[in-house]
Image 1 (cartoon, rainbow, N blue to C red):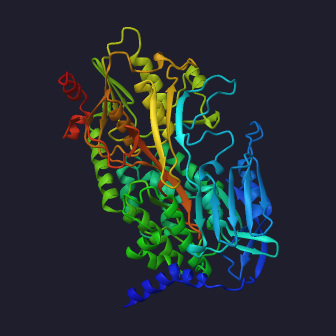
Image 2: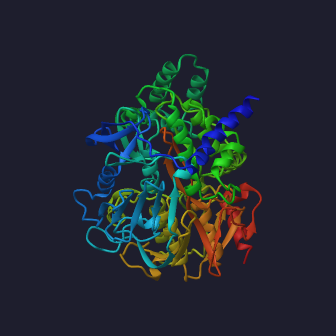
Image 3: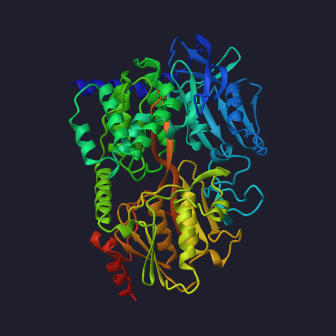
Length: 639
């Protein structure tokens, strides 16, 4: 009976507004209060404004609205170049039509607009992607690396061709979801979370409010330093068995336990002491700690209702695997899964637990997950995972434990006679000063290449193509690769294939694109046959397992479509969508499979890669993956 009553309340919360809005009613006059708050951006020491205005309607002090002109100022500031960067061409103006009901944000190209219709209760985009795209960026371009260095020299990757289909005209019907838009007293107010979701989340950025200040930051960075520290020390091989036993047997409060852990880890080794110092520094600098310091409280009725509806709108637009999960509408999905009952509860702990269960138990897609609690909640909920994520975790443990028996299998580059093995467990690119990327040319000249994907490939290519090289077979071992940076995957494909072709479909707007790139692997600022393994008469292989996920799945799919690389091992784990990051209206941070779905194209059609790719030759025993001598014999037997 209680469950039925809760469901009825939730159903009323979600859909009760629709019937009322069909009847003609006089325009309501709202009680509106404006307050100003300090606006932090990225760090505790970075305050953009001391007095950014927010608006609160009818007494709900935890549900902020933003006036459209203030939002324009925020977007312009968000896009403005740094002191040493050239003008990026971003321009934005706000226009109100003659009726006073429609406000249009106009980019530097006047046909590129976002229009808020306060009478109809809608926000529309002529092209959602174009409106949120940098003026100096290419449409649906995920290569992610600058095309030239500071001296104008070609840099790492060259876009050799692309074609794309623009997205549809998109209308967000906020009225249908019961999300308010208020035009009153010359002000045009839209909830802050709605604007942030549809203008900032494409950049993996979130906008947070805790009743004391506003915080703009990468969503992935708004995580407790304590949580990151505990995750780090829980990795295999970090703690000694003696320290693990001491921590497990400790009795005391959470505060006493944390102090004990820090003391034990610090005394354990130089590495432990460095980890503790790093944690202390991160805690000192953390924007999340400042955000989380506000008083804990229940959510207002207004925030509870709006937060639920806004979440449904965002997921209906942004979640890239709705069809695979047979989700027609998240409003109904949340009711049918019982998640809606806790989301409709004013208790933020119950709501945060529902976000965790939704992403990690119900969606269970390997990309979706809970990152951090709202400032209203004292502690993150106890983690739970669905069957798929449990399976991936179990496979990952088996893979890593088996590989640990064969130390040579963990080496980035290893040779057995005529066979070279190249191994990395994530696709990564080092940060630096060339458009946010490390200057690999200078690092190579100094002999200090990083041990990331690009550094490993550059060194491996040098060894494989050296004079009088004995190498006839090259095996790219992605069997423990869980994904990572898409540009690094592009670079890898271009190294193996000469010219890499990668396709992406946007499930929100219908836009789609295919990009072709070449990589400068020998670092001569040229893009030619000297940069690739293709055309050298080599036998190319890729070793995969169910642990090969996301970009670790995309690369084998591209090899399969190309046909010149032989896949060996087990079926990959899937994971077709790029990771998206977002927040709830009450300040919870989470990630999800976004609307950018990595695909392969065959006969002109885009195909999903979420189910994984089968190897050409199956290897059943993981021992045979990592015994390099035995695997080399197996490869010789294929020819």
